[in-house]
Image (cartoon, rainbow, N blue to C red; front, top):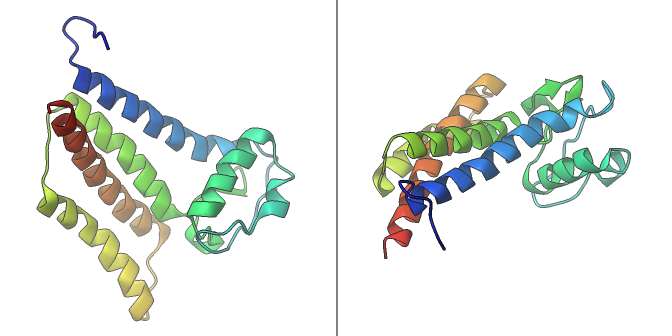
Length: 172
């Protein structure tokens, strides 16, 4: 594979990964905007199951694909999701934060040579885990802003960690 002078291959790969993350992030915002207002109201279901097929069959092809991926990967509880254009987003607030965090983290890794180890990765996941497990075992319910932020922190550290893995793999 030939590279352009002055642009390391690793940076090109990081830029490609960033592109994928940005497309994913844009898609979760554009899909509800591409549908008629107030046409998607409650997608609550289970992770790993397609339980909103009837609602998705009424969507345009782009939204159908985005919501299908969201349905498979997220519980989509309406009370834990943001709404755009009166429509529930394809993923919950925490997953929205993770996806945005992945984009931000890869952008940071592209601009600044940040590399983190396992310990920092685990520490970056702690807020998400504390918030999630506290809701499971305590009489506690965080709000969507907290879910967005904890997901965002996890996404940022995960993406920076991934950038380091890519760099190490390409230097072999």
